[in-house]
Length: 424
Image (tube, rainbow, N blue to C red; front, side, top):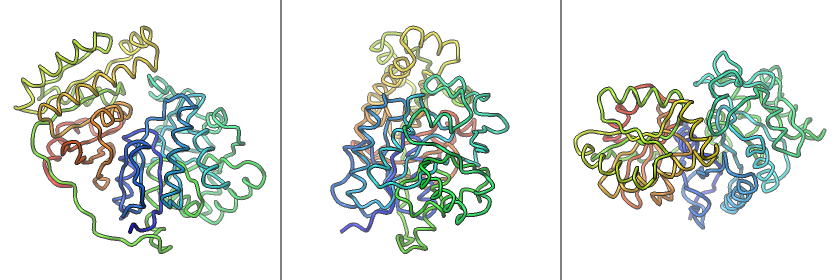
């Protein structure tokens, strides 16, 4: 019989799902990633936390709401005490959603209460002050996120961004309240909720801010944010008797052929591809080329080189090429075409013996994992920003690293693939 499930999370992309589960594992929780709404078990599993990996970040609002409602109801039936919406540390979303409208759904399913929005990720210099998002020393709208091909973020005021996505009133949890501690946060949020303003953008800059926000929100039925704030929950669960620290199995080391599939067009991913190309073979594909031709070319090329050393196949492009693809296909369709191309290539590579795969890009990761028929992932404890190491047993044993396009060391492709040969 399963133990009580403490935490049920919905992640709007796959790299975020793995990152969240990895941070929970590093904090001592038993955490598992399930892929999509059809992958959840019928009975409570022997874990403290389930993270469901979804592809809802850029989905049409109605689709995202329907999928999220289904998953939220499933997680509550499994006994989850708290539902958590995981989104990007830069609040990536479209004007119509899907952060606000999905948060509304979770609140309907789990019960009315204050809901905090806390994307802050101090380790990556993503912070919020006076409701405005900063990326390092830049406002979000002045950062490279302004030019994101899928979810361009042109407004740094997160309260304004969120207000466009919800029918509920939005306010700010100001920094002076956060600095006063968990009790002050709890009192302020409950007062805002009673006054008809249940959604609050949480100012937060330092790790201690996140610790206090976690302490204030741990007992609420719904919480939202990045993985960093959730990393403070497991110690609170232990203190409440909801979780017992336990030994957890390591991920196995995986030998065999290895590859990188890079779909993100983020500056950091293109830097990582360039660094990898100094010592490895790289094949650059244009999503505007006929797909069948590109797939055949990629699989033939990889079969020739993959047995000797890791390779990289990429659709990453500079802003000019991205603009050309979007002009020809539309913003969403251009991205989906590139993701589908790499997903079909991934399937062909696995059929040809690939056993270690690093994927760059959240949407690309989702397309590939779904194409491979993976239903659940074991996740390694968090070790470094951007290194989302995990393992799938089905349909074949496969070591994976799913990384956000914007994160990770420049040389991480080669070093991570090498590390995946060893247990973690």
